[in-house]
Length: 153
Image 1 (spheres, rainbow, N blue to C red):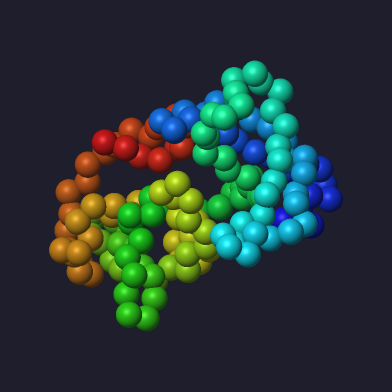
Image 2 (image 1 turned 90 degrees about the horizontal axis):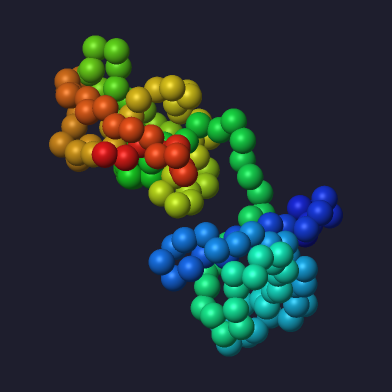
């Protein structure tokens, strides 16, 4: 986080209890003491919007980095085996095959795949525990949501 702060202030997003984005701000102060009882560090952010009020409870997210041009899948598509994580990739003939993957970060139901599959490959996101290599599947097409780009039914 410290190295990222040298390029400018970090972004902070504030969300309502219902999960709606209230405002975007910039991190302005990081306390240099750690609360030993909770293991937390106090931070302060400044928001241009007047949507936030004193005493209001919000959930905040500190945006430390944004990854671009990475392969992502819904986190539920990633299975954890005894030796590695894997996904079932759907071939052109609708036959699945298991592919070991290296998972990077996971956030908001999205997993970044660092090794194993390429962009554009289709993966199974539901019912993987009933599959094995060579099984034929029926593919249900789903629409991508505008907010996340993740497929939903």
